Image (cartoon, rainbow, N blue to C red):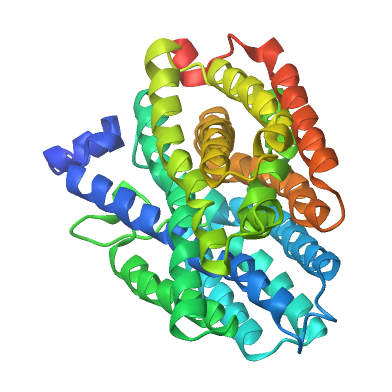
Length: 435
């Protein structure tokens, strides 16, 4: 009787992948870091176009009687409602089909919606385009978080994802002055902000198509693609994630945190112009840079703190950041009453440091940590979907409330977010707890 043939030898590279997929191809790991960082920062060059265009719209006699501050606030709310709906959807789609197809579709939709808004100022067109823009923008974060989670192990995620999370702070920092310069200095037209944002994202889309991969296993001599998750399994995963108390706590905290960040993100130039009427349009788009600069630094610092000082516990860093944020928001109106540009820069910088520290820890690191390996996209999508519902208030309320009521409300919400997270102070991700 013939003996069974010996199995073929397993290459060292394939054995490493089986034992520890993160050991495979460090070059690819950092390639993914860079291309996904650029991809999410690129979304902001389209997202921030409307924020920059508001200054010109409110001063444009042809449209300002129709597109008033309140109407613009409602348009922001429409965008954010679509954004929230998309967050609940696209994270699960990324788990099922892989991040690549979801992110590429989002980029194409975002560019198309921006071009429509650049061509037309009709209210119904704006509203419809903002629905598309919101759905398209929400296709970025959760799928890209899942993409990063596939390449970096848990013990590095606080630091690595902390650095990676600077992408949205950088986008919020770089996009407004760049778009404002093009719109008001080069073309003297708010329409140009939309076209410039779409052109920037188009370049980034090409880079993403060339360099992105869904998982380490796709980079091999025989190119492989991720197998989609079955619909029944995807639904079960969604239900399981919904029942996770930590994921839902993160979602509730993010709902309370997000209004303050989005109010400054979407209304920053207008808020500065209200408090500093002597500043021109370009200056009003430049001063909020302080918010973005601090936001770039915050995720790096808080990621290191959560890994090193708190041993992969994410909640203490969140609670401390939220407590400081609530104090600064409560003092916003008194501190800026003198009309000093330097004081405004300092206050916006302090808000940026604290809000982005808590934001990056909740929306990316903690959401990926407490989701399962297969459900990281779903968990990140659920947490960010809850936050995006709160962000609707950040886009809507500045068009209706005065500064004292507005910032007092934001301060109370940030404080409450910290309170609901305190019971989880010593909670650690499952894998960390087993280590």
